Image (tube, rainbow, N blue to C red; front, side, top):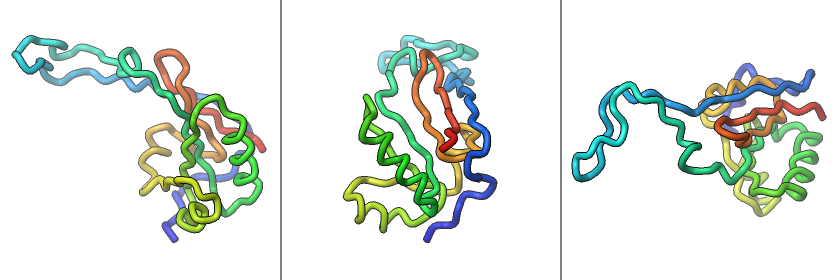
Length: 136
């Protein structure tokens, strides 16, 4: 029974916001031969080099409606969906669904993506990540 992530509630009003994964280098980044790839202060977006080929679906597993919605989303998605719990029992759900289930330990991902309502889905849209807090 991991602790529920504080500050997250069931979605009352659908919301969409974005996350820019870009970083600004704090030192020169060099390759193995010493050639500078990115000088200090360069803004680098990993999505320019690697696409995000999956969706993250955040849900409260104590809410059967959210679990039902999750099943529908996973069954109809055009990309793999990783289920990330913010509350509930991940091991029980994993055994029941016979699927990998993740838990947002300490709310690290929910904070990074500014998720305050679930269910929420995170997916790539161009050079940023789109976060949809879904009404169900």
